[in-house]
Image (tube, rainbow, N blue to C red; front, top):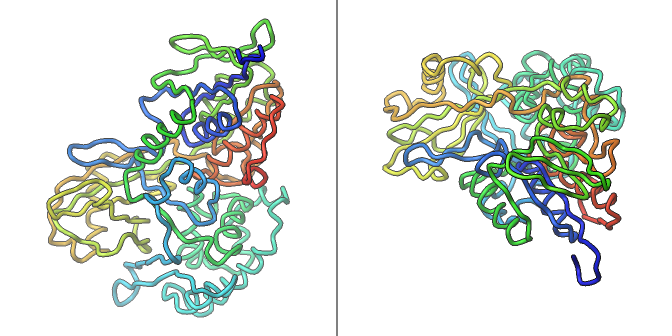
Length: 462
């Protein structure tokens, strides 16, 4: 009890991923007592690290863009921004391994000119498209810029259909639109909602000249999303319970909420479920959502990460994207992993990996090592010291046409019960940015329900 005899409000946040941590920090910063429950022995959700021998390995390569203002807030809030710097300017090496005459390197990079001229020079010299295809990209980009992202009809159309209507060839879709779209949406153009795809390209490439500058962690993700996040939560006064899984959510006789766990029951004035959609569905009380079954209709999409440790350096740039190969994006994780001895550790990030996600390691090794040798001549004589894979079969929600109707907002029909997670109605695809924004929305809704003002500068955008 406070000195005035009034019991302070208490909130329970279920889930310790980026959405849950953000919610907990926002609530406690507003004066609410918060208990955060996480079933795993760590925070970070699906953006985490683990040990493999002497290496510290990220389960998958995660990047963000300068336009990801919510995730940048998160980095600042946990005092980790310096550990995940942004490029000075967008610069993406793109290596096509299969054109006539042998491999060819191109670059997607921006100039200091304003939108849309910031990409004009790069597009004009992009060697992976013909002159006519480059011109068609400019026309499609202008048409994309005119789309109204609030129009629900955009969610009913797949991105590939729209691109073809605007003169985009199969090659243009592969070498440009999918190059970006698969990595950000975790789906190819035929399987992506036009609404989500338009949001990605309008925000990332057509809103501000620097919006698409890329940032990524120079340390293991666990340092940011677990170690520093836990430190921030502890400093804020959040009670964090790891290895504690919520098993039920119900009303108490006095109208509050009770969260049952495998160890104790917690009573609260507000509860935020910041867990995946199926887990949320299992915890929702009867009637909390008008059509709770819709959560089970939100599909998922896998991401496969392939990890290769060579006995020498085979790549001299921090990352590149590939065309004409099953390889998508390759990142140098040598320094971040703590690898010693002069070798190099490369991580291949393979989004929308439905065809490969269940393949045995031996099959993936036989498929991807020769591809790396095609892409990187220095790898042809190098020894492979380790080869392993990490699989996230339900890495993201599937951004298929129609998914917008299935994604719920932060508020439920049950006062005091709220939802968070990248799969909720953030307007963004399943990204770290979307997860943090969902935390802002859930915290704002909870504080409103508790009668607390909430004027976070990013809340309106979230």
